[in-house]
Image (cartoon, rainbow, N blue to C red):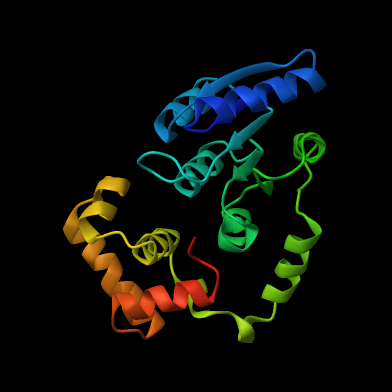
Length: 208
């Protein structure tokens, strides 16, 4: 059994590896602390499961997920994130993730999820399953569902109080590009200012 752990925090990687080694004595594993390192390992050899964080330096975990699914569609990717399900889970599953879990999940549930996705299944919690059913009601979809993944990420960063320059640095993009994303977000959501964006984000539980 081969698992790739992708997380930018060494302590988190170490804890996951210990947990998985205790359950799977024959485990072979590798680590990556950023998206490019993860892709290099995925291109180099096959993996039974990739455990991937959403928040990574540079490109986001959702971007890395899409690359993995585009080039190796049979590789199961289990998202393990600090972000609550209602912020990223639906987007991750639509992008091809085999499951979505928060880092607060009990260890035994992580083992259950790894086993399930490795066998070709999907892992979703009961609360996430309910949300997915509710999302089938297209008429009730919130405005932010119309945003691309990158626009959604920029929205959340604006709502966290970061400036355009800070966001550009975080995402390794130009200030002009981030400004363009901001304009698209405002247009799609029919809002006018960063203050209105921030208010919306807090109203809908998108900001932390």
